[in-house]
Amino acid sequence: MKKITDLHDEKILRAIEDQTDLTRENSNLEEALNEAKERGKMYQQFEDAKAQKLLKEGKEPYPCCNMVCKSYVQSENTQIDNSSGVTHFWGRSDYCNTNDSHGCTFQMSSHPPNSLNYEEYMPTHIEALDMLEKHGLLKGDRQRYKEANARYSKVQTQEERHQTEIKGITFAQLHEAVLQLEKEMPDFFNPESAPVAIAQNLCVEVEKAMGIYPNIRLI
Image 1 (cartoon, rainbow, N blue to C red):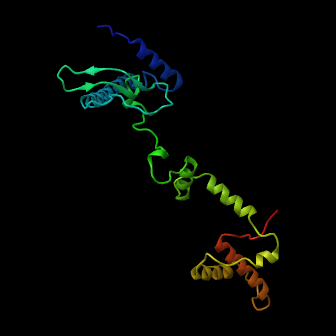
Image 2 (tube, helix red, strand yellow; image 1 turned 60 degrees about the vertical axis):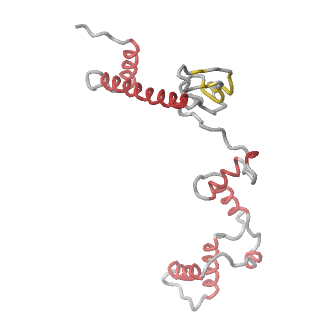
Image 3 (cartoon, rainbow, N blue to C red; image 1 turned 90 degrees about the horizontal axis):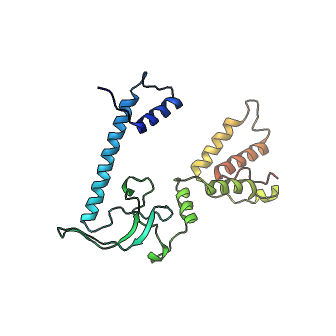
């Protein structure tokens, strides 16, 4: 019996063969395509079942609140009355006019939060992103601000540097700074002959522990 060729399938198979090293001779392209089509039917059945469940509950069967999508419809006067009397669906609002929203990547089940719906302060979009970045969930402006602050927000003279208050570190960090100082000193260095150098290097280690080194403008 002669095999009937589906022109749509043939177009897909040829496109795969043209763009990859796979062919119908060296792989199971046809079987893979057929399996993908069957999975697609199964997913569509799941989506249809969701829609029917919502419809039986008297709700919008294909809800979507993505207002920037071209398929979004806010309201429409439609009447759906099930003959059994179970479903009475009298109007539509916030739905997808393709009747396929459940399988869509961009489906939104609800509208974005509105500050008018809250009694307490509602952060702006940028403030919300700033909060996420503060807790390490995003990377963005806060890190750039921190780097800029480290570069420019410095004292201008050595005298101002000497007046910087030591704060924000623990004795454990100070102890670690002293130990680090000993590690970085060259073997030939004689601490008894250069106490000023030791003091200066120790102050540098303290600045590092405070997160303000170098504590003077570079430009």
